[in-house]
Length: 327
Image (cartoon, rainbow, N blue to C red; front, side):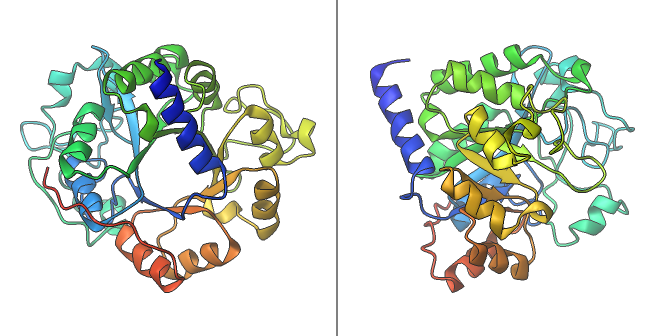
């Protein structure tokens, strides 16, 4: 990495790690309540609305191309084959498909009658929408002319299902190679529930902010205060006063991104005292947005960036300008 790139990354780290960063409005999967998730259509809509960050997820195809998808493979509630039929569950992992094969599927409409469709009844369908590559998303950002918006990129890797993605080393290598080739490193944060990838990013791209995702409550927690889990790369909260913020600080993280239901005022205060930013996921109700802002979080990831903008403005937060663009 050249000296100019190192300086740019260092500057971004200071922006995110210090007090000068403005409140971070993040469009979750591009704003999936509005348009099909993780598609050029949803990202173009978010850019046009005006957000600080496009939040997205990535996987890797058999031929080593980074594609944008929340699942590690084809989603049976989203992906329609050339015959117009939705794929059967579970969908084929991307590591078993080439990019050419992935591009055959239409992800522009949620399966009618599904629980997912009921969750987002107002999402506007965009037929014939393809799964984008990460490079195509970067190209779209450049096309928009927005020189400020960042990408918050989640590595979709599950230590319990190693056969469904590249290993952490290969995954991070492919991501960093692309970002460097595109000269886009200074506008990226990398997030993951699997902290192994974050440790690799910190070692291989010093200065690129890492976002430590966690969930404690619910049916599928990734962290425990009583010990290390398969997700935490050997870091044990029990060795850090049973504190997730202290554990993440010890791991070298810049940002803690907890599940909405796990956030407390005390944890926010503790994080800030340690120099950690707190960006909470996924917040879709205006009342919850207002409550999180009042508690002092540094950013919110939301499926409704339009509503988040309204609530943020009502709290006196300066809004990012929109950069109208079409896919």
